Image 1 (cartoon, rainbow, N blue to C red):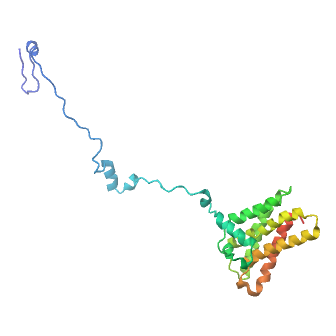
Image 2 (image 1 turned 30 degrees about the horizontal axis):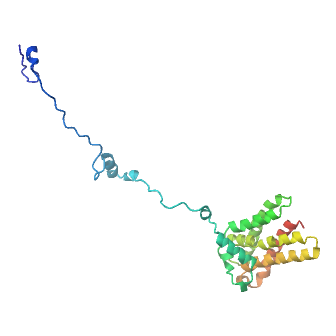
Length: 237
């Protein structure tokens, strides 16, 4: 018995005829495309670029340069600091140092290190002197700066701060000598005066320029008094 529908979609056969049926089913050739060709952008990428949002797809390239050293990050030049120290300790023009670099190229870390070193030498059981010396350095330099500007000088506060800080080095140099000959009052006094004059000359020769003309003593004298006060903090006088 066999029934054939009119639409041709199905064919029903009898069980006896079904036993003689055999065949194979071949799998269709299906290819999956995971993305587009290398020469074309995916649809989402194309859509974003057409709408002006292509910057969202940009990948920032990592900086190939090596990280800068810590001293360079903090703007600390040890060679420059060492050269400035020699300029302050040897202020004689005959030695050939370009001493104007201490004023024209000021830095902060060198003078700060000098002031802290002087403070550490001055401790002697009076730890509060450290913060007081730093305070005198900052505000004493501010006073010299304001006075220099009033007198017509063309210096910045950073330049004055650097010069005053570096010029504490002579007082640091005479500190060991005062420990050795502290019992000889006359010699000790002469060394103190020498140290103060040395420090004041180093600072004044850099800060007091020709623009002051006849007003130079008005600026040299406060600088001299400032270093006397610094020395008094060390000696306790």
